Image (cartoon, rainbow, N blue to C red):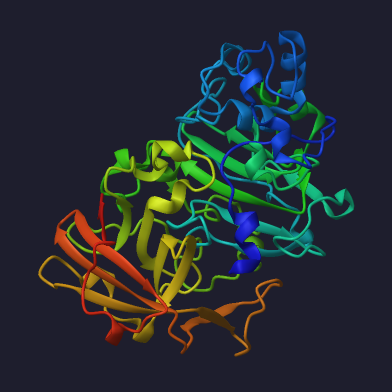
Length: 442
């Protein structure tokens, strides 16, 4: 799924048209030097309090990247909170409770090339992803987002209150044009989240990064992009397959994911499912696989602060290095996937040679388990290899023959495992754990 790696590495913020933005050519442009540490500005970004406040209104992503984890009074003044800390979804301005029926698709039906459901594992998205993906026609997923002519309208699915419009940090920006995360509360507990919207409507541009709200109607254009992340959440429901909810305090909304198709009225629901490449039930995907006392599900390196990652990662790139998941493919749940945040220095996903043993059957009585790792691909319903760029109905995921490496895992207790990866080695070449083995918990 390498085609989608960059697009899928979405977190939470950015900067966008019609606001003028600057292209960052050198990351040192916003790095602090010793002499600047005590200045009245923000490094090379701006030099005075007034200048910085104005600059950060239109370049918030760069300012957040500079301020992250720094105790600078000007940063505190500009952001009023720690940059990058979303916390629970603020529902200020919402009305009513319960769910609503969506009467508009997020993207016009005739402009949709394909939809991917929740539950994929791609690159730094080590645990199953809590959002799906919409891709427009005439755009290659994961490719350049610098040409607005390929952008299409992003639509609100129902009436609601936009409670958050945040620009992505520089390191997660998908385009120099802009990149935003939008939350729409349709009731006080039922909301949709969009990520990687590259241009905002005039209405939303007026409130971006300012903590204000605005009402939108069903079908209203809220922005433009060639593709975007989309998810639906209901705070009145908590997924049962996250056995330690506190682990996800950094991204609490994922505990409340609901099916991304089920709330659309007909015929919209059927029309959207017709563009969904996943054919296996549940069509909307699944992200919560934890079973207490079993290997299946998500694990986090011991003393690494759960999903949020170690403090030194600052919730920036690399926070996923301490993540590990034994789950099932997001398009064909019959295929076991081992997803690692740090496999030979990179976040990678593999299928399992022989597709056994099933992690839901592995417990502390099983002893050491060796999984030989293989790459994987997909067959379409026409029994053709899927190219991963255009729509197809996925029939089956399968593991390839070449062994890329082996992992060794053992459940020590119901919520503790010992794990080690051996890149480039077959199972027959691995006799046991070494001093490099790590403990993971949940």
